[in-house]
Amino acid sequence: MPPWLPLSFSERGPGSEAPRLLTLLLFALLSTLPAAHARIALPRILGHSMVLQRERPVPIWGTAAPGEAVTVQFAGQQQRTTANAAGHWQVLLQPLRASATPAELTISGPANTIRLHDVLVGEVWLASGQSNMEYTMRKNSKVTRPNVPGQNPVDELDYAHNPAIRIFLVNRKTLARPDSTHRNWSIAQDSALRAFSAAAYFFAKELHQQLQVPVGVISSAVPGSRIEPWVAEAAFAKDPVFGGQKIDGDPGKFYESMIEPLAPFALRGFLWYQGESSCYLAETTTYTQKMRTLISSWRSTWHDADLPFYYVSLAPFHYSQEKAQVPLTRETLPRLREAQAAALQIPHTGMIETTDLATAEGGIHPGFKWEIGRRLALQALRHTYKKKEVVADGPVFDHLKVRGRKAVVYFQSLSAPLVSQDNKPLTHFEVAGPDGVFHPAQARIKGKQVEVQSDAVKHPTSVRFGWDELAQPNLFAGGLPARPFRSNKPADVVSAR
Image (cartoon, rainbow, N blue to C red; front, side):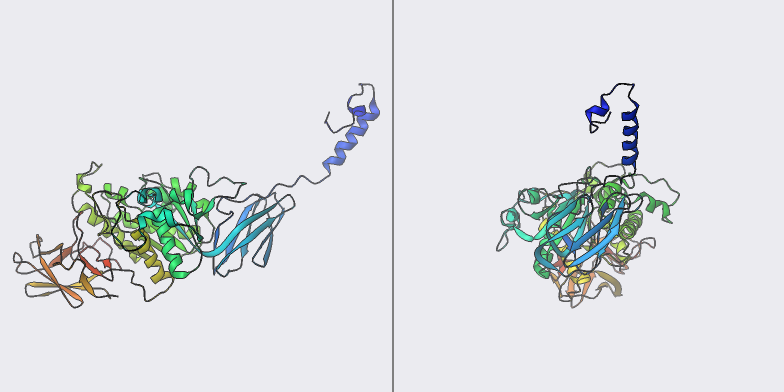
């Protein structure tokens, strides 16, 4: 018998019929009462100390009992909804103004109320990729100290305590599980920051300094990962290039566990730092198409085809000396970079150059993550936040003209004058004639162009620049390095914007 029945009823012998009838009547009465309410639960991305995206609708979502009423209150707004038959619910907060004043977001239902404290409103970005994006602030504190004026970026952990910068580190094993503590966001300081992406943090720091609004950044990265695991498997199946093919590399593996559960958390855009694994596979045009598929897949997941996507061109490294599944040459890295640049034809994308950010100490993991983050922020400031005074790109090749024995290189519209960064003759230019054989060339700046020539080439037809895995050219503009290029790019390589 149930423990809540009186002993006089539950312990009577088999000959007593009246108590049995009464017991049946009690069970019948209880069966007509409403079922117990299920407690409201939230995804891990919604929690204390989070930053909500300003100036656009903000989804708040979770689970409850089917049909259960849910009320969400924040910043003077009150939104109500009802959980559907599967127990899922979602409301949209109307666009919010930026605020660095900690506020409380309340989600309530019949069974419980969740109060999320210390919530700010500002800019939110999602950073992803492989080991160079995962590269932590703990590692950043151990690199060789650069000789820079003022606060040294290697010592950032000693200074970082800005409550307007918030971080969320994705745990692959737990992201999709509800969490009753709601404490997965942190202020960017102390132990939480030590384990966080250095590139993503320095991006957030620069963005906050320039915009003066709270910044939240989410890091979801896996060392050694290829691009395929970050793409929804269904996106490959729908893609006209990959549809019907068997795609290796575990498509969807990290997308399903580390990207999709974050949606539809409101974001301003994405940051991407990956490609090293793809370079070991000597990928070229297929990598461009995979980037197209990844970008469209993520934008589709967030139902916004215009979300910005800024990414990092790979730094110099001796790939040709590494063991790999396929033969690698000194041109493997430049060709992969060319494939990365080709993805710039996709609207609302941007790429930073890193040819000057390599050291023997860092190897494939250069330690200049403070500059990586800053340059990514420059892309966002110029192209997303429309700050026209910001120089976000170095010189980018446009076209070539031949004048006698000189090949004249023209660049896309420059935001700053061309310079030799070290005041030495320009380096890593090569020129070829009709035979297609490239020779080292002399190059000099002439206004907005660069003149290139070689005594070994009487009739130049093409020029290439920085076309070697270890090249660290000195052609700059506005403090940013020129993008490596070859003017004789094959027809199957999509041109960059």
